[in-house]
Amino acid sequence: MGDIIYTTPVVRCLKQQLPDCEIHFLTKPAFKYIYQNNPYLTKLHTLKPKLSDTIKDIKAENFDLIIDLHNNLRTSIIKFKTGLPSSTYKKDRIAKWLALKFKWNKLISGKHLVDRYLETVKFLGVKNDDKPIDYYISKEYQLSEFLPASHQQKFVAFVIGATHFTKRLPNDKIIEICNKINLPVVLLGGNDVKDNADIIKEATSDNVYSNCGLTNLDQSVFLISKAYKVIGFDTGLTHISEAFDRPLASIWGGTTPDLLGVHPYKISQSLIVGEDLSCRPCSKFGLEKCPLGHFKCMKNIHTDKIVSFINS
Image (tube, rainbow, N blue to C red; front, side):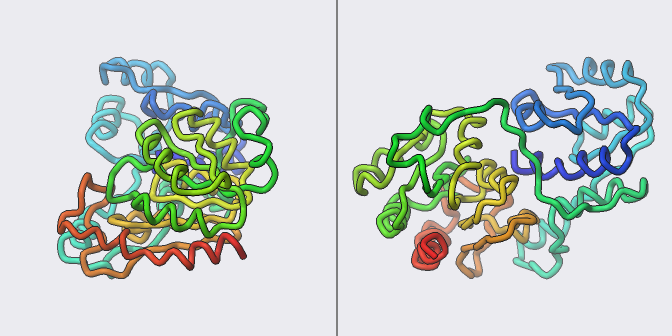
């Protein structure tokens, strides 16, 4: 999800700077919501169960060019089978492997993923417009549909979900932060963190309200867009919040923004929190448990700097 949201500036810059072109976007069905309301897109395609059917659809469109922002085996097959001219995103596979294996972090380019994606269209004369990522909410929602009156004015959105364990702050740390924030807090996440949210609510005051498991992604993004400030981990919803320029405190555990090139992009206020440990990063995308068993990257997080950022 995070990788795909950072492709949106490429589509926007292409359409705004080459207005006569048609732009189609191909992604998995599970991620189509990121682009289904995007005004810069001519057509949205989703991968078929059989790759051969997807290739047949691509050939039927008579495209002039493929911009490959994924660069994996599937996209390589698509490019080979269609025979179309292409420009491909260059992955820092070796540098990232060395950073993970030997912690040779200086080999990582440091460029944001958006800037690296945009290099694929540089030959067309397309330039970075230096604007944030895009997300277009599907309908007009009202805060009263999702939040009690006490949380409809000025609230902090806290994204407590993440796919992998090593990306999540332990419950006791979240409770510590929530108890020190002087504004209403809304917890966001899926069903997988609903039990966590119940534990956090039980240990905090009525200041904390949970929407975990109660809203779909689009509705959660709407709540993010209306938040005063946002706290989150390395997860899609946190990255999507950047589309609305909310002040963001992003908390990093086993993954690091430098390795992935996904530090907060083009927003006015942000705080990146992560412990400087010799074992970080331990993975590119997160793990189900700490490889060393101590989980210091999250357990040692200093919550005061997060609270100070939110309360200031």
